[in-house]
Amino acid sequence: MTAPRLEIDLGKIHHNARTLVGQLAGRDISITGVTKAALGSPEIAGAMLRAGVSALGDSRIENLKAMRLARVPAPMTLIRTPMLSQADQVVAHADLSFNTELDVISKLSSAAQKARRTHGIVLMVELGDLREGIMPGHLENTVRQTLRFPNIVLKGIGTNLACRSGVSPDTRNMAELSALAESIDVIFGPMLDIVSGGNSASLQWALSGADTGRINNLRLGESLLLGCEPLHRQPIEGLYTDAITLIAEVIESKVKPSQPWGKIAQTAFGEKPPATVRGRIAQTILAIGQQDTDPCGLHPPPGIEILGASSDHLIVDSGGCHLPVGSEIAFQLNYSALLRAMTSPFVAKVMKVSAETATRRKAGDHDRRPGRTRRAPRHGRSESDRNPPPAHP
Ligand SMILES: *Cc1c(COP(=O)(O)O)cnc(C)c1O
Image 1 (cartoon, rainbow, N blue to C red):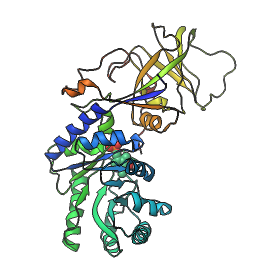
Image 2 (cartoon, protein in one colour):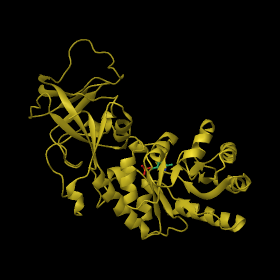
Image 3 (cartoon, rainbow, N blue to C red):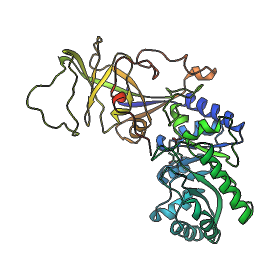
Image 4 (tube, rainbow, N blue to C red):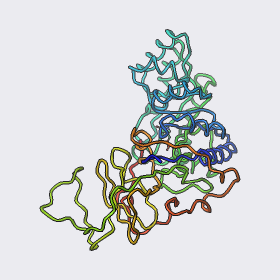
């Protein structure tokens, strides 16, 4: 089979989405399924929709357009503030966009008039993570201005946390978002359908039993795809963490010294050369590298340790095990590795629906075939332990 490839189990993604849709419905919170780490895949979007997500969100208009062209039947939200230069496309392919700049809303209004459509706006509020958002003190004025634009409908407000600075959603900042929604309703009359309380990092808060106030929507990507929450990157109980695996093929398998020899300068990516001193090792090279994924975000199966990576080579110590040329290794991925693999033209995407998801099983008692292991059991320290995955954008 072609390698490298992502094996994407739509059944497991469906299970993850269905589980969270059910849990959040109990708190009157809908889910916007975020497809940006899926490169707007219509198959993955379909699995999310069948599970009951109420809309789809993506940060790239190109992905929304691709899903529209594939006739994915869902309201489409652009979850990054639009570029002025893309206003026409945004109006054409998105029902709703997240906004923080009046200049952009003005341009969207002109584009919507030209296209004889209306375009929905969610105003994003800054609550401390210091990425996108209107400062809370400026929200009232921005709402007032937004309401004046023809062919623009103010649909809601939202916030995004835990991305740039790792600020956690908690009772204080979530209550602040609720209070802002209340005050807009008091001043301008009830008009906010959507109060969007954040991404997968808001799940813990939303399911904690805390008062959810006016918040009625979350935008979930990582939790649906990887079954994991982004604050501490812990598996979420009852979800599959192995819905997506990355398969790479062995192209060299030799016993070599663990230490390089000769005069040492910089490596291809400017990192330090390997520091491992462990005598001779079973050094195996896989045909995958920086062009295909984020090597720091790969979790190898037990007994295999990642030693380094360059553009096209991943070097591992396969321990006591000889991995013949042509054999395949399956890795688990973090968000960063997934995003890069999904967007790499060198990585094939293979969709499957596992039979085991037909019967509901608890995550944790499945899929333990060698090379297809879940994240938890690992021998030795891997690259990903030394380099904790960065907060994703
Ligand atoms: C990426 C993104 C999300 C989804 O985040 P996850 O942590 O993957 O759930 C939600 N909202 C915005 C604005 C985003 O950019």
